[in-house]
Image (cartoon, rainbow over all chains, first blue to last red; front, top):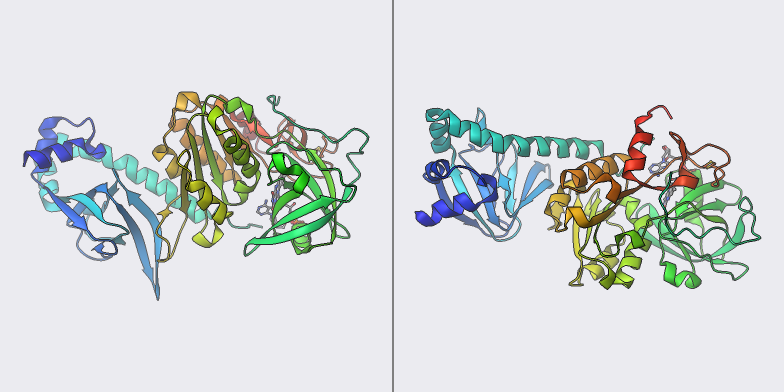
Length: 152
Length: 287
Ligand SMILES: Cc1cc2nc3c(=O)[nH]c(=O)nc-3n(C[C@H](O)[C@H](O)[C@H](O)COP(=O)(O)OP(=O)(O)OC[C@H]3O[C@@H](n4cnc5c(N)ncnc54)[C@H](O)[C@@H]3O)c2cc1C
Ligand code: FES
């Protein structure tokens, strides 16, 4: 358990967070690994975890008929999954490990419970999620602009 | 207005408004709509240039377009190299020229990348799409005297894996142990195992000392704006960032005003600008 607490504390996503909080959060954490090519979750499945990537690389994909489009890859020190934060708690995309990926899986129901019990913890967590969500929104906007295309 | 950079001018005696005649020696298809032409000057005099400079190329009977030089300045005598994307009449006609065809060349024009400014510092290059072409001469120059620079990161973004310009060369550079090369694409299918996401997302992951870095950015204007913002967020000051601008050009020598950007002429004061100089110019939206 001490090992997991340390891993959670040392993951950049939690950097600077009070130890009291990381210890609480560690209660929702477990170590997981995914082989190259393995799906971590599928679009529409219940978003019951989120992942702190420790090593490896994960592609976030949207399936279209006869193909899958990758729209972002996420690597070491980054996170996978935000749908656990908001109802109806279902994944909006697929996530697939591109290479052997080690991560910490955080149980969503457990986290939501702890955040409801302790709003200060919830706020700390939101402060870490929001910049990432905004960065990803900004990136998605740039992708929609298709800046490398020829425009008339 | 501009900073000081090495900028060879047109050879004495040549009229900057009269094209010199060249002949295409080689035509290589890089991407579905992009070709690289190697041109030899008919009079045998090679065209000396600095990384980041451009020429006005004429497809006779069609027109003239500004095209950056994408070759190695140290190998100028083995031909003048341009990488061109067919987007309209002139660029389309230029990319259809084959070996032996005549092409007009005026230049070199403009102020290029300050290569020496980064000596002793880390170098970060952020390139998007065809923006890698004007940066390639700079990459050659840095790699040619690699020990004069600190860490070297090349961050390159393309639309899809099929749009990765100079792919074989990037793979060769990547084999070196003294460069960090990251490539990302905006979107991909299942046949790509590299990064997916916008090029700006690579900036926080690259290793460089922001207080001792010179950054060079080239690509579509929106991408450069966000690229510069990502560099700024990483701690690189505007005075250490250089961006290459594109505006419609006609004369190429600061006479006609076609390429005006605020109070500057891109052909004469640029195309490469230091970002602290560029930002106020960009603020005047209607020009
Ligand atoms: C300093 C400088 C350096 C340049 N370097 C290069 C280079 O190395 N290689 C290169 O291929 N081009 C380069 N360009 C751009 C090139 O000059 C133009 O693409 C060319 O003039 C287009 O002329 P055209 O007659 O073929 O098309 P136009 O009829 O002028 O344009 C056709 C269509 O393409 C769009 N278009 C025009 N230019 C671009 C562009 N750059 N990107 C995307 N869409 C565009 C127009 O909006 C229009 O819809 C450079 C421009 C400048 C100012
Ligand atoms: S192109 Fe004529 S002034 Fe720049």
